[in-house]
Image 1: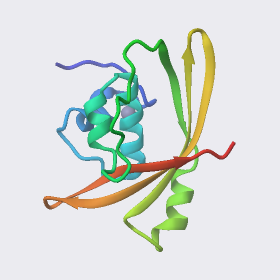
Image 2 (image 1 turned 90 degrees about the vertical axis):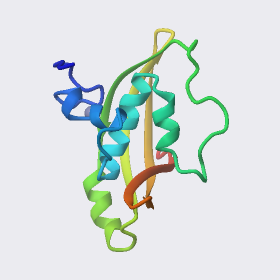
Image 3 (image 1 turned 180 degrees about the vertical axis):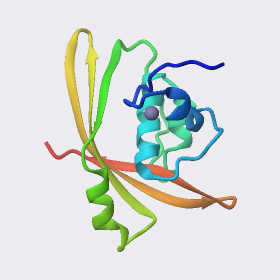
Length: 139
Ligand SMILES: [Zn+2]
């Protein structure tokens, strides 16, 4: 199915951006790519992907997405992945941080989520995979 949809994360094409990760055809090789694909998965209400990319130590037991909630994602802005990565890379190559702002609307009201997400990379059956661990909120 060849479509030219833009990617929800802001990339030019879903099929060459987050699509392969969400569909399981590829594994994100950076924390930023994983973060973008998780944002796209939120917009698609793809709960299995969100849980699969959540680190087991912090993975929620309860439902992540409420299908009845009138939440509309409006856009993603990654702020400082590279700068944070350069600062942290030498200390811990299997840990990374991505700062982003995601905008969304609930019941007509616009909201803004500003988060610094923490990611950890682990070897899963011979494949290095990034997982979302947790986040802090600078505002
Ligand atoms: Zn994308």
